[in-house]
Image 1 (cartoon, rainbow, N blue to C red):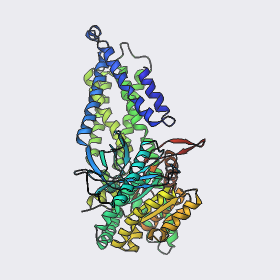
Image 2 (image 1 turned 90 degrees about the vertical axis):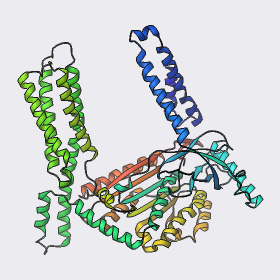
Image 3 (image 1 turned 180 degrees about the vertical axis):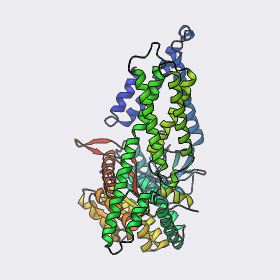
Length: 593
């Protein structure tokens, strides 16, 4: 009990205690497991069938954990070397320090943007530390951007190691770069986690990173630029035009009332174009409202199914007769749930032809079997507590099918024409446009990372030209450093850069409301009225800012729904991390790369 309570308490205080304490105390849970297993190794009790269940479950859990850790260390562990590094910042301030490490990518190592690895630098210590990867999957190096918190921390020791390495490199004229003995060895464990979004499902993307949370977003930007430069611009334009045409065709609903409405509006061409567009938006808003109501009602389907199935199974195991009211509740509740499912079948069958598949046929068969089972139960009068195991199995199979169908409808409330179109493409799937936003609190870090971002932009411009580059990519960097002198130094250092001349660098806090509004307006202005778009919003940063971005996204979704633009969707993928750190008596957000 003490072991498990200590784990729970440290989890609750994880933002107020040192991470090392949090990490070490969590290993106490293994002591709790071992004590529980030893406590259940009792020959007398086990023969009586007493406490042996704990022994079985806890032993199986530990065995699964040990096998997983063993497989992780055996199959995903790589040894590499540092090929390039930078120690950014001054010794006077921990906040201005950042360590940039570029590690040679091991052979057969593959990852997706947004995944992370565990790093171990033997020259510092033998501990593993998780960091996101900032390079593209096809790059020859694994790039890491590590924020330094304290000189005594692991990141501070790495920073000092890189500083000394740079000094030794300058003193020797860089002659030991190719000498493996002099290079810094780095061990890599991974990759772990999941990639940020499925590119097949989206036509556009907005990458937002705060602090060192820009690292996964930089990986996504790097991958996007690499894919763009491998495609001929003319071929890309033709593919986009063809995709827009096909998306328009895939997005048109087969609802007959909608078709008649639009057709009836076409002959009155003497009316103004503004009036016609207004009528279309009003009708789209009505359809959006109808879909919202249906999807909201459908949310109760899985809950009602689990309730009726659970009550039926539990009440039919009672050792005494039903109380008055229990039998009518089961009868009418089951019939109501089956009618609910029948309504879902009718609704889905009334949708477009893309919805009419083999599952509709199975739904109809399940509905018929429900009616047969109800008739059988009434005629045999077995709904009063005389269900035998065979009947319970039949009832459970039918109920579970209906529950999972309700869940499937809730999860996949709408088909994604963008995904259907991307699956038909041959070759690389590239976003139509990518927006990269970085919010940096350090002017020194911005000055050092800026050349890397500008390099990707210049690569795209040289391959596609400035006009096409602007159409497929936009980069925004917001520096919120409160030190005016550092901001002036940053401006002087980058004022001749191509990105700075594009107006990509701003000093001050961004307005995410304006950013998302701009993305929405671009979608509405660039797409056909009937063409669907799907935009990925990938955020990486502190939990507080993640909450704000989520609120802005929800408000944007409501505006699109209220205006009838339901064919344009925005999906948020949130990778928030970091905690609250007390500094000078104040609490502030931090994040690690």
